[in-house]
Amino acid sequence: MAEDAVPVTIINEPLPPDNVRALVPRQRSLHAVLCEALMNTQALLARLESGVTVPKDHQHEIVRLLYVYCVSRVGRARVNIPPGSGWAF
Image (cartoon, rainbow, N blue to C red):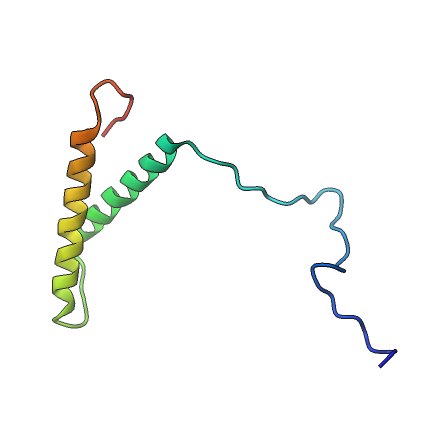
């Protein structure tokens, strides 16, 4: 037992070399987060409009509901953005 190797854990692992440092997530502005969400939703809409296939018949309704929801979200985002705010579509 005394000769068993000590398992490496976060507490006792060796320090990384000097050229390695931890990545700290930086905070992003609300504008950046909203732009990314809008772009992702628009990309999903484009994918849905180009055509998707689903293996089971009852999943067609789920895809249709997803499409309708995305269209309403993008439409609502476009209506709620004031002109001259710097947001472009």
